[in-house]
Image 1 (tube, rainbow, N blue to C red):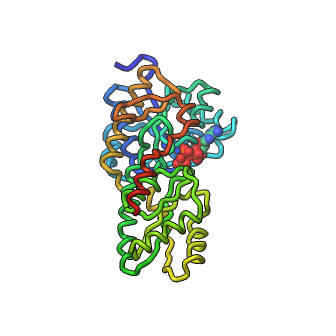
Image 2: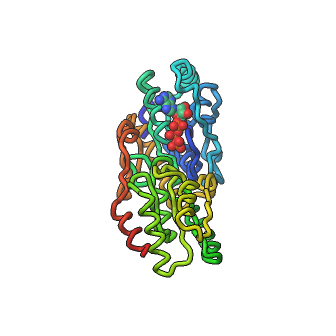
Image 3: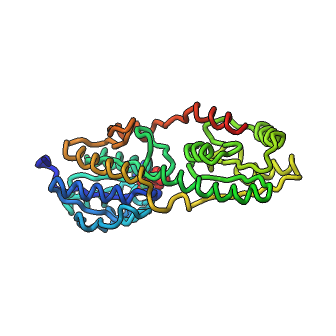
Length: 328
Ligand code: ATP
């Protein structure tokens, strides 16, 4: 049963888009309807709150979006919300629309915004982690991460066809910002010769030795997966340095870019988004706030937002070992 004080909540998507955000919005809207409270969809993240761009959503407003990538509410990076004046306008519209709480679907930046807003105006909120980077503490996976991984391995499988046909070395850059989760897991799943991630101290010498070993082992082609946040250098610099050492290699670079953000969410992302959408609404109805709903060991857990923002998920050393062993 809904607590009397909560009658209407707003939902928004903010920061970078990720596949499964639509599924999460659908879950929030339908859970609200199930618990007999109103749900207001806020357009373009905090921008819509500042500009009063929002409308009521019912269960049928979110039909046929469970399988669609992106976010139909649209997302934005609102500079104005970073200012006290912008947040004041946002709060005026929050009151004008008689909202009682917010569900914020986004990354750590979006959660920081919600946390500041809460401190200033005591607006209750629950965060749902929506980002492909999987860099948020308090959940085993973020919404969109699994879909991005599957997009990456499909792309690398295609690149491998070309690499083996031409005896080429491919450097493939994948997204993840400062985190190497996408690179490490997609690298293992696609049989990369080496995986360079910011969490591990890499050296050019080691990379070159790995390639030398692979040549000696009779391999005619190799895939090197490089996280966009790799500290040793960007994918072009690494390819250049390798070419210098091995002029005989046919080296190519592929930056996968935004294809990693789009596409129909995988089953895992849809189930995750559905569970966290319901969990967020239930938490609000129980009077909870300043928490992020996440999934750990397949159970819904709520993490204080400050921890979700400040702490980081650690890279599993075992995965690094597995990648190394299998590249023999
Ligand atoms: P992604 O991980 O995909 O980049 P994100 O949620 O981290 O997503 P950001 O651009 O960092 O994306 O943040 C989204 C929005 O949250 C910002 O555009 C801004 O409106 C708001 N925001 C972020 N940090 C703050 C802050 N310190 N104060 C107020 N608002 C903030």
